[in-house]
Image 1 (cartoon, rainbow, N blue to C red):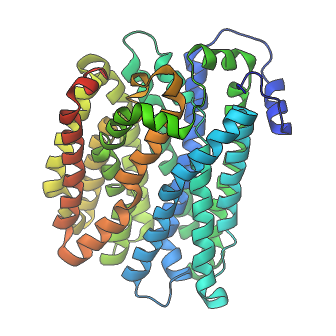
Image 2 (cartoon, rainbow, N blue to C red):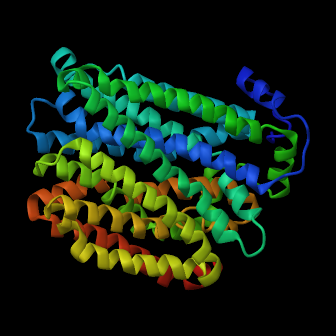
Amino acid sequence: MSAETAPSTTPAERDARALHTDGHPISPAEIAIGVIIGRTSEFFDFFVYAIASVLVFPKLVFPHLDPLEGTLWSFAIFALAFLARPVGTFIFSWIDRTYGRGAKLTIALFLLGGSTAAIAFVPSYHSAGIGAALLLALFRMGQGVALGGSWDGLASLLAVNAPEGKRGWYAMIPQLGAPLGLIVASLLFMFLIAALPAEDFLDWGWRYPFFVAFAINVVALFARLRIVVTPEYAELFEDRELEPATITDTVRSEWRVIAVGAFAPLASFAMFHMVTVFPLSWVFLFTEETPIRFLMIEAIAAVVGVLSIVASGYLADRIGRRTLLGGTAAAIAAFSGFAPQLLAAGEAGEAAFMILGFLILGLSFGQSSGALSSNFSPRHRYTGSSLTSDLAWLFGAGFAPMVALWLSSEFGLLAAGGYLLSGAIGTLVALWLNRELARTID
């Protein structure tokens, strides 16, 4: 059943349809707004959990372990969402085919918001023992399943509907959600830490951002439903043949494109965690720096990331997306050789690491997602893009904070740079081994 013919099975879907009945012409700018709102919401959830993984969960859920070991276990639970995302894609692709895109998106975002809000009620180890960790893992996997189902196809629709010569510009638009989500999450945690005594923050203050995340998800749900459930956009999805196919059929037919899409952005996604989650854990565990100051550095660096992502769209349309991805992978390789050591060089070194890192990350990350959407056959573009995104995040980012923190604690920050270098090499090798396919990105 197509998105156009599927019944409106939820009140939210019907309300969203009622908000948009004027039948005005399709606008890429309107699609872009929906994409930005949706991605910012998802990344806000992501960073709220990531920050709590460093500042809260080691003390709340693993107080019986030393701080480093507790943080490593916290990062292990953090990775569960990336393992669960392909499962979510499999489950929700069936819901999409059976009940329509609007029903799928409604269920997925309520699951995401519900799982996020449930984390706010996780008990401490002192009151629930190992049950606290098990509940946290369960809710984290719920987030991952929901993220797999929250794929609405708007990013792919935006890419294939972009004006001639503007594919790079429109490809960077969904990526703006990452630094925007980080800015809001960092500033919110910074405010709570500054405003509350440490005991109150660890008791109840940290829970507040998870409730905020639920509220933002509700707003994002209506913003996205307002687009995807309308007849005009359903018709555009069908014109572009952005309809769900089965996972098995998609993998069988498009495995080569999926492989390129999953491994080509390894450098970007490894870099993503090296300048967001990992440095907060290193600074918090191994320096005297306060979380408040470093969260402010992260927010400022994320502003640089926004500007750099915008610049990536301009550059990609002039030099080609494949050239930009290869060039930034080389830049990330160079960055890995010296920059991580800046985290041990005091406050100025930390700021330099973050700002330079976000500058490079923005240029790379801005073109790393959805670059291969047009390489899928029309029948498999919708499902293939979703699955590729899941695998890229799993391979490139899922275990990055845990591995980088363990390597740096055992062998020094240079070893964390080596991990980042491996991602850069992976990107360059993927682009080289798939030259003919990669050339069609340009």
